[in-house]
Amino acid sequence: MGIDINGYWEVRDHTDNWMAVKFINRRRNYHWFNIVGGVHGQVEWKQENTCEPWHRGMPLDASIAWRQYLEQDCFHGATWLSQNEVVIANNIWRRTAARHHLADDVNWEKIVNVTMPLECLHVGFSSSSQPWSEIILPWCGTVGDLISQEEPPEQCIRMVIAFDS
Image 1 (tube, helix red, strand yellow):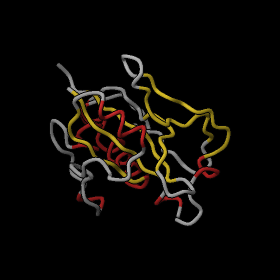
Image 2 (cartoon, one colour):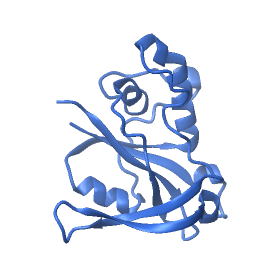
Image 3 (spheres, one colour):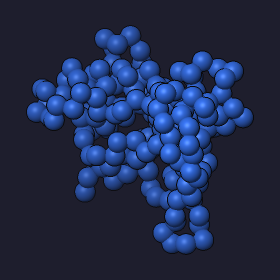
């Protein structure tokens, strides 16, 4: 049985709540999992002058969609990465992927930024049906239209992830 990655990009809105705005790249790739989650081996972050983002757990202020998503299944290795840490992870990916004979994707994860257009917000799951169905609200605007103006944009964008097996 293999391991899969699950997660969202979240942004902190003007009410200081985190909203799930986009699914992460959920293609199975153990090298990427090692970079962002330390799963099946660990990829060194020391040369990046930052700590590995592994084992942080679910943020206490996670979006409702992410909290409800994690309630649906048996997940492990929950953690989160800042926007800048995902940039670093992509840099590690570019530098090391060829050694693992992997596809030459320039960036494994497309970085969410303030100019990115959004089509919807992931607001939660309806438990009235089985399996749970996701509640999605249409949104016409950019990430910058949604995020808090009180904080620097890089503190208002993060990726939350967990693994299942």
